[in-house]
Length: 156
Image (tube, rainbow, N blue to C red; front, side, top):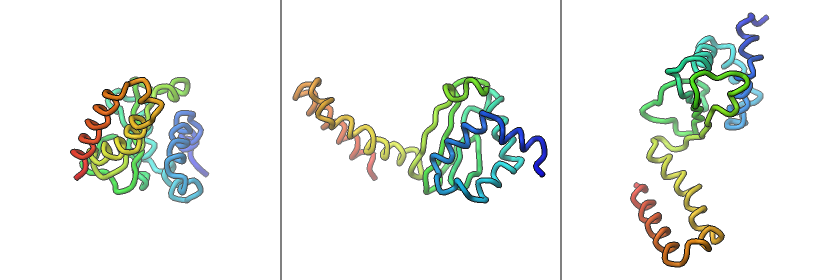
């Protein structure tokens, strides 16, 4: 039978928000023993509690291995990594949904992540003809040329 601390962790609305975000990022883990084991681990409950309550702990990184960490590693895992950043000092059940920013990091370094975001998000926005209609032809050509130059400088 789980002890009271484990019940509290599972029943905490803040934890449920984090769990939902993890499951949205890593859907294959939704029905696995690995995921259930994560929240029975004392280091996980400590990391979550620090993230929820301590001012110094602003970020929570969750790779697919589900080893929660509050510090940015020098090298990211080869697969995606979930990053959760809080915008206020203490997270409560009432403010957690509006006070966290989540991002899925891809690539092995922040530089590779920048390249992925630039190609997957920014480039389609800049090349969208509906956006370009308001810029004018000269501005459109200048923006796209400079952005393609930026992309070529980020690709190694």
